[in-house]
Length: 108
Image 1 (spheres, rainbow, N blue to C red):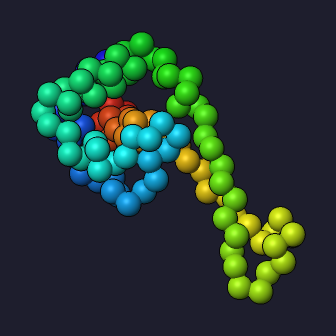
Image 2 (cartoon, rainbow, N blue to C red):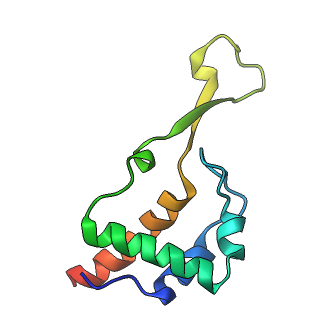
């Protein structure tokens, strides 16, 4: 149960696409990328606590779905003419990005 490192966190923050949606809580990826070292230290503390306690915030288990009309000559009444876009919490996306690297390191 080694805590996450600042290197792991900053590497993952750089991998996030800044154009992605902010999610239901309004935290954008650009905000995460603009955060200074003190801000990143707080994120690291949060993620380490989640990692060690094995409990994630229940709000991270929720998503908002927005139907997007595919356009063209499709019938607007037909549900098949839409695709769903899921809005997940940005911090949850960041934490989920940390997990594969950590689990790969631990399982090898």
